[in-house]
Length: 96
Image (cartoon, rainbow, N blue to C red; front, side):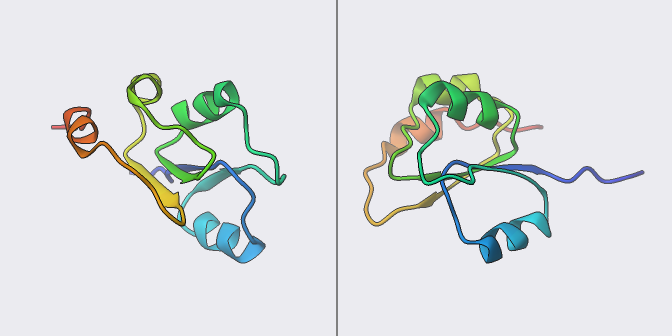
């Protein structure tokens, strides 16, 4: 059986060496500009992804998570953050 490579959305610009590392493990859908994706674009791309590399400009809330049921991992490239741990736990899904 052929294994399926995970789809990884990268919402903001990152260095080429980071994209290369991600491409070694999955199919990367990356924002190659220094302008953040608008929320609708971020949601559309993240909905098709298994993983999201999010940044300070991204807003991940209950509505976003509901629109992206395929996401298994959200990694954050941040210099500081606030997270609602109870809400993130309540939206956790298991495949079985």
